[in-house]
Image 1 (cartoon, rainbow, N blue to C red):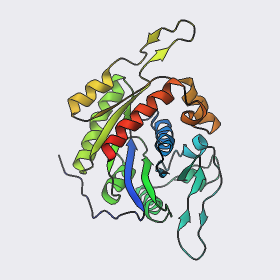
Image 2 (cartoon, rainbow, N blue to C red):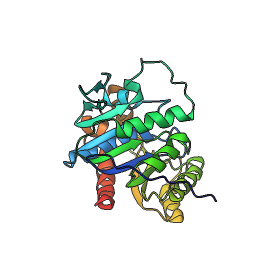
Image 3 (cartoon, helix red, strand yellow):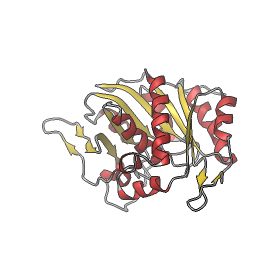
Image 4 (tube, rainbow, N blue to C red):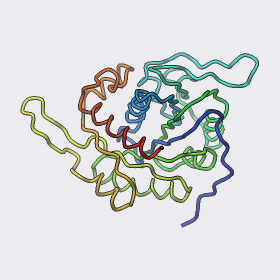
Length: 263
């Protein structure tokens, strides 16, 4: 297989570590994981930034409850990121009117991603999380070529189709010489409110098995939890609004596992 061309990667001033949050397909809850992982890392005392690189479908602003436009810092060409829930963030969703589609070809995507990386005044950050669009397209290629990625976290569900796409994502990062920090299995189980019975609507154990087969760390599982959905709709991540919810408790463990690999 052809090795992905990795141009000289430019450091982002003030940013210590840069982590891509990726998924092989859409609908696995990658952006939900990104915002909750970001606030979980901030709760550990880290200075955290969140960059929404899904130019066509920017959902991060709604999940974080922000709508204000980023401002250009006077006397510079740098953009000041928006602050929300203790994080610095940037998103295409903050630069266009609500509901207006972004209809761009690949080169325009690459230019915008580059501006988000190097024209935003991120300040001093311990970790910058990059919420990637699903798949292995132009944005992913731009990031793996230009950004000094510490590593990548891959989000999946236990379903067979989602797990098949994990391998493609892992292969992309390996060809780009980006370390895989671990795999998160979202929607792993469901507990019935009325009977407390645990079920596995999308399968059971697939994430751990896939991580073992691919030789990558398994960071943990996140259950199906309505608090994740309501938090995303309300603009306050469930990790903050419902810290004792099952998904929030699971996220703490995943955060600890990730931090062990970032040290």
